[in-house]
Length: 84
Image (cartoon, rainbow, N blue to C red; front, side):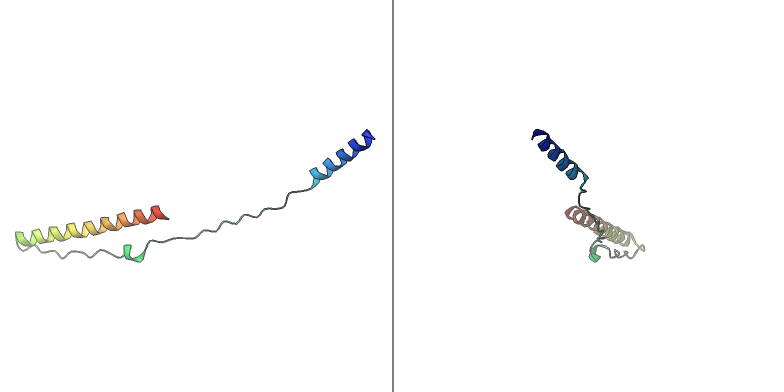
């Protein structure tokens, strides 16, 4: 009787070892994400006024405002990319 049980046990283990696991299908989907269109609009180029020192000062102030706008856009892009 013991040999019979051992034989059945060996047979069942062999049957378990030969069954294959179900095939697993992994599908990777890549979705491109783009920044909001409001952050990709060109910054307006300041009009250069250089007739007087006052005009030069006005031009410098406009350039600084344009630079600040560009840097604000970069900060917004960084914040947007970190939230995704």
